[in-house]
Amino acid sequence: MRRFIDLHLRQPAGSSDELELMLRFAADLGWGGVAVASDGGQLGRLKGLGEELGLDVISRVDLRPRGARELRASLRRVRRRFEIVAVCCRSKAVARQAARDHRVDLLNFSPSPSTRNRAWFDRQEASLASGASCAYEINVSDLLGLGPAAGAKLLSIIRREIENARDHGVPVATSSGADSRLLMREPRGLAALLDLVGVGEEEGLEMVSSIPWGIVEVNRGKLSPGFIAPGVRVVEEGAG
Image (cartoon, rainbow, N blue to C red):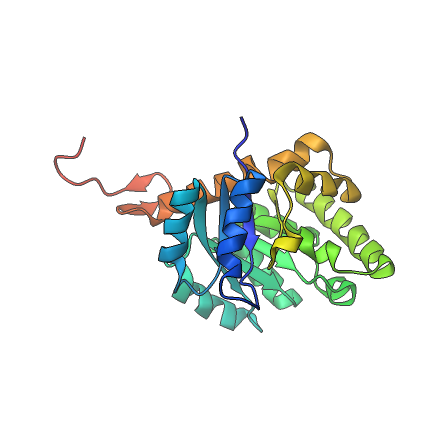
């Protein structure tokens, strides 16, 4: 049985209760886990609610740096505080730096086709991301908020980005990017929307299950006590 995870629920702009309602709705839709992008202040409460619902709540931060130097400084500050670190790439300089930095888990890009034409997941970034074990993220909510013309342009760009990811062995994670219940979808419905960008059913299901779960499990291992480097861990004397 697949275990589904939505790696990106955004902080709602409206009611303070909306995020809790989104978590309840996620459990009803069949998600096994969700990553919540927040400042971390309410994470304890949300994780407690998740335990009641049988929903794994994962901490996430979305970085929006203006340049490579700002990105490096932000990564030093947040990497040990969040289970998922995503970078919103709005310039080539940021995209290049994020793709080569092993502290970055997810790369996502602007939903605006004009901005995306200037900074998108090209072959060079795919090559860098492959070496840094970084994943490329699709936020489905970006597609739902555009008109027909802009939507068609964005779909064309995403198709090319997915091909670049495939060619370089970069994992692709698909998330809702929802900031309200109206933008949330059940797992198989979310995966089905990827048909618009040339992704088949089986591949789409992997993008909402094993791929995002793999990212979370690796990061939780890195954040666990005693971790030094992949395959290297401090073992306390007397431990079995």
